[in-house]
Length: 347
Image 1 (tube, rainbow, N blue to C red):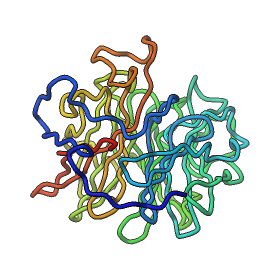
Image 2 (image 1 turned 90 degrees about the horizontal axis):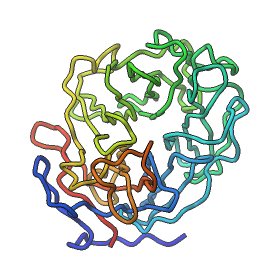
Image 3 (image 1 turned 60 degrees about the vertical axis):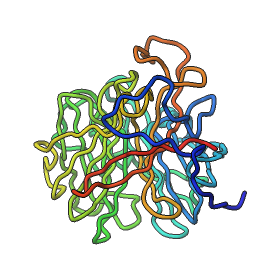
Image 4 (image 1 turned 30 degrees about the vertical axis):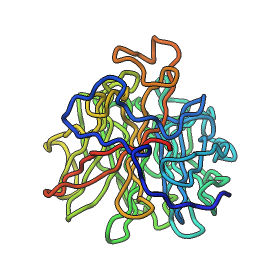
């Protein structure tokens, strides 16, 4: 393991970008990590001044960075194997959570039988260190609709919009009172984001807990991440089709996380292809603490070769695209609303 080195951020490491300003072509920041297979839907944690990242892919590809802007090094798959209830090892949008110094949980969504095509359920795995290896929790999924051909899950997603839809995009959250919660998305349209209370270890749904809907939308809204600040709850999410450059990161603010808490609030754009200097599809975002102070926002964008894909790119019909991991400095304005005014690139 390479020891951490603290560095000042000079002009070669930081690219100042003001939101709501159209940037010239070629002004996009460079991804901080972009292996040949891509690094989509990044989940990143800062632990002991080292950064650990997980990505969509076979048995959850992992990576480690000495500082947020890299260099990042591939660490192989985080999972030892797929869970017994899954039909394959291709895991989507994992989430890495620290429970204690020697307790880590990795959430992921895996394919299952019994639902519609490409529908998934959410599982959990545990390890004693952030890079694992992670072993799937025994038994059935953590979250899974009752129609799936799997052992009964802790949360069977009552009241979901579509009976044959699966669940993806798990995201852990620890509230200020210590309560652990899990957010996730139901697949297909309408989109819904839900939340359920977990046990203290983060491995099972809490006894007697039932999930509830936070948001239902006729548009695609996914990849939820929850942050509490100034007494309010900020829900970050991705909006739009993941395969296009119009995919974007948004935020919403509510004073609680009760049923439908985010249905009537404004969805504010945070990261778009326009205000990132041309990053194609800036979504799948996660938030991590910085080494010194503040927070960092990690997100992916489509790359064609060494630069962002063109604005009309469609990953479902066009060849050559992969998703690299980008990095921004997450700040808060005078109203305690989130802003991203700077992006960091590799030195």
